[in-house]
Amino acid sequence: MSKYNNKMLSNTTQNQRTILVYVHLGKIIPVELLHHAKLACSIMAAHDIYLITDTECEDFPGEVISCLSVDWDERFNRYLNRFPEISETDHGYWDVTLRRLIALELLTKIVDKETKIIHVESDVMILLPIPQILSALEGFKLPGIPRLAENGVASFLYFPSIVQLSFFCENVLCILESTEVPLTDMKLLGIGLSHGWLQEIPSTPSNAILENTQIIFDGAAIGQYLFGVNPIHTGGFLQSGFQNPYFGDDLSAIHWEMESNADLDFPCLVAKSGHHRFVIANLHIHSKDLLPFPDMNSNRWIRAIQEANGADRLVEVRVIGPSRGVGISFKGKLRKASRIGLVGVIKIVIGKVVCRFR
Image (cartoon, rainbow, N blue to C red; front, side, top):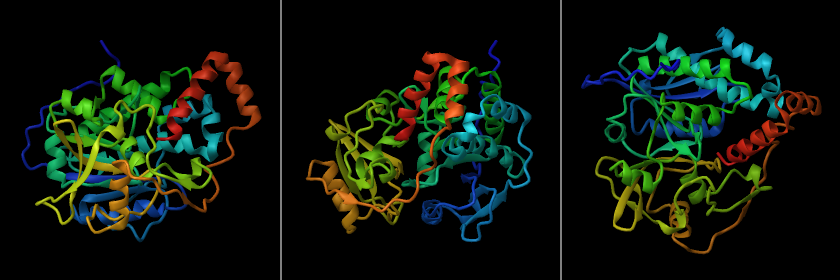
């Protein structure tokens, strides 16, 4: 009998509410979060868009939930005590990425238990009406995420109900309580996929064909290919065409288009592979560019589509701010090496290579 919650609940309610949720923990709300939340207001009502945060944010267009006075679960605190390097690395970046998963549980005290939840990261653009997204996820009885190699990517995270969100948070804490090595959020979610308490959302054409769906959810790779990776990772240079090595399909072999969408005021982003046609549900804008919705008259979108289909790629030079941090301290490295050994350190390094281009 698994110690994790794999409970599949019937999802028969016809008029369930769906909410879109962002989480930000830290002093400064990212401009891309506000940008994408305001775009989302074109797709759904502002009162169905939430931000969970520990800082003030008067500019957010929807509902703000404060987690400033939250008492974090003792299991999470014990995890941080066992692996202090999590809080030391990159000024606590990996601490925050895990903590935001647990912060989602605040929703269980606020919204109805049958509510569906879509959680996206701050640099994710929703490209389809919510009913179309839900139709693609209709068969999901467990939380769903895109996969990247053996990892899960929480850039888009779907919960079919508040009850499933509660199970999810409990499973996250169980993993953190039992792990013998420090985990990134992506690695932890990959464990969820392998243990069966998370379902994989189709994120590649080949996977979508197997699942008999025409809608693809972008975990990271499609946005990276169309608009490049965050210049903070490339010395300030920005260029489209990055092929994430952990994405299963060759993105350059796909034909990209924008097509009119009768349900929206902007066109769909479409990927054609052989005789198959797929619509992209969301886009992870890893470059952090503040893009408009797809627009057939937008020079930036026209250029992205042309470059994706083989045109010469323009290289831009960006002024970048300080990185997330200076990395783990030497003392922290020694502590980690003594506890998990050389093989363990190598595994952590490999995991970080995946996470660098998330």
